[in-house]
Amino acid sequence: MDVPARPVTGPDPQLSFGELGTPLSAVTFVVLDLETTGGPPDSDAITEIGAVKVRGGEVVGEFATLVDPGVAVPPQIVQLTGITTAMVRDAPRLPAVLGAFLEFCAGAVLVAHNAPFDIGHLRAACRRHGPPWARPAVVCTARLGRRVLTREEAPSCRLSALATLFRARTRPIHRALDDAKATVDVLHGLLERVGGRGVSTLEDLLALQVEVSPAQRAKRHLADAVPEEPGVYLFRGPGDEVLYVGTSGDLRRRVRSYFTGGDKRARMKEMIGLVERVDWVVCSNALEAEVRELRLLAGHAPRYNRRSRFPHRGWWVALTDEPFPRLSVVRTPRADAVGPFGRRPDAVRAVEALQDALPLRPCTQRIPARGAAGTPCALHEMGRCAAPCAGHLDVEAYRPVVADARALVRGADDAGLRRLSTTVGELAAAERFEDAAAHRDRLADLAAALGRVQRLSAVAAAPEMIAARPDGARGWDLAVVRHGRLANAGRARRGTPPMPVVEALVASAETVLPGEGPLRGAPPEEVAVVTRWLERPGTRMVRTTTPWAMPAAGAGAWADWVGRAREARRGAGEAVSAPGEPP
Image 1 (cartoon, rainbow, N blue to C red):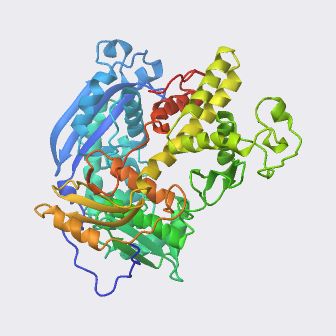
Image 2: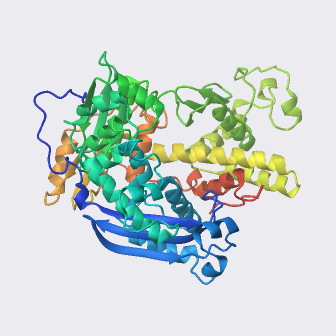
């Protein structure tokens, strides 16, 4: 799997029609305008929608409707638009209109004058009323005008000014359909101007809207030879060092976006200024690309990546190896460990929750198997410790406590979680709401951590799993997983018998020797990526050496309760509620 990326050599390949981009003549635009009651999208209401669908310079459809905002139209808006409260009183409400309008826009590039205003209102409407926002490409004629026109010919880029400049057939009058029609003529005028600059594709048009530094534009040729395939890309600096690693289903389009201003992050602009070369690894499917990215991040630790550079730097909670084991926060996972946690304080919180759930000793001193003669601490007086340090408990009597802890971590028994659940309910019933909320949050974090390690360790335990899922083109994406690591990946394309491909992948798969800990030595992020792929609907198990199953009494049964508890923590639910029994 860990094949190093190789630089491109030889002449640049001839571009295919797909690589040339989408011709503007083949693009369907929906030019739209909204009238509102005024104000920001989250507190505002739409009063009118107007849109014109155009393709190849021809109008192919129109959409226009008044909308009842549910509130009175302010006087200043009446004066500006002429839309009164009486006009919209019998109009449909936005939920009844939004679905039809989104269907009218489906598959098209949206165009608006001052697009952030109109698109912002549409996004807010989707958040409030349910239809998902499809994130279409957007062209802003105001922004495009400022990029294309000189100050002398267009001192103002207001819609009325540009409509006059381009001799629009419809005069904008702050009514949605009329303004949309005027914007159509402005769009066509601007497209004629950008055509003289060599802009002939949608991709070039979208890039023209973005402010791109000369340094970014000068390095655009570095993306020319990158293929339109799924895989991983690496940006290399002047010393051949890896600056940044990423993954994409279309390598060429993603790499090209860095040089056309598609990525607006300041550190990415800084990184592009240092780039000297782009390498890539073509992958057979998305799973292989994700895993390769993680391995390359771990191998190179690129300074412009912020995540996944140090896969083994997490914290774990494990039992110590001594006559009277206690919980310890460690870097290296041991058998029956819980984790990983990104921060040490999170691991400490898990220790506190486990100590609430189980009568494990909380002190850190080493206690001999026989002859302990210490002095009991205050926790013994509070009934929270059996004081083995003072000889009040021998090794044999302490062993069931350790067995209960291992059973909780492995998912053999969730009695500890249920005890914490009962405590939360008792505190809430006693109206000790702050204490109940604190115990609820610790229980939720502990159950989530246990559920995660049980879920991942179930995959890491299998010496070999072979799975397949549809590739979307009537073929199969294939994966060979050994002890939670991706050992090989491939694709059986449409018409190719999949089983011979499977056997070839198994024969050439990476040998994986299991290591220590619940994940058998595999990086947690890689096991998580593999597990998500295996769990996705449509994935089929070809064969596995051992059954893949979750423990019946594991923390996975608490997943719904954990979600409700976290909603309550964010203030989206009741302040405190007794969790009761999980389903």
